[in-house]
Length: 288
Picture 1 (cartoon, helix red, strand yellow):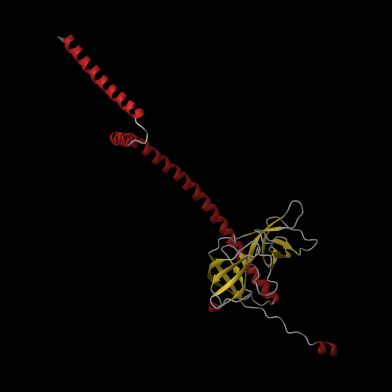
Picture 2 (picture 1 turned 135 degrees about the vertical axis):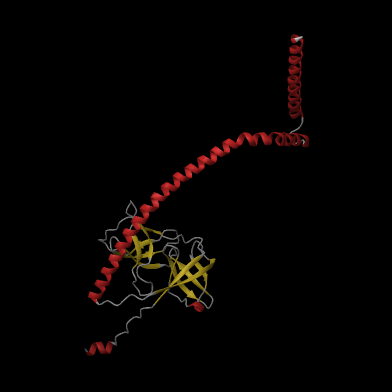
């Protein structure tokens, strides 16, 4: 009797396996026989996804947990590195602050010894750029704000990092800004490391040129250029760009600190204008 029961059990198992294989075979044949864009194929595929989705979700949970744990560990490592970097930057900034404090104190002492008048204070007027009139021949912007907020022609305009141009005309509600890249832009600058005075001239491209350089000047690649204050309209010390020397000995180029394309908000630098001294009467000069 035991043998008969065992044979019946094996027969049932084979029959169940055969039916399952037959169903799989029929399903495969249907998938290959039906067109890919047939709606029945989409329905069968979606039904299979619905049936196996809980199983796939259950089997995939350990891998998801492992991946999340790996990401957390990697983020913790990144935060640790970022913390070390910020600590190093904080220490470097403290040293810079100490150096700047010392330099400011020494400058006050030197100014007191030389009895120099203090530099006029600066006022920053934030304005929004409403139009970019730049073309291959002209590099100008139109800003919202003019005489109604104290903007007048000749004032310097800075972006996020440094000088971008100057105001060339001002109306009641708007003003026009000539960018440093314009061919008509000429700004007196000085290289900090080499103490060389020159003129930053626009050439209607992204990199203005440095002109009127003294013959025996020794320029350094990467030197920071700031406004020299010559002319009395643009304040002294506004950062402009980095000096880039040509290996072939060509005209030095300047990499501006601000990208003049796509500007949205800029600041107009309002400072006290230095008036020119009165002209000397030629007749009075002859009398002397």
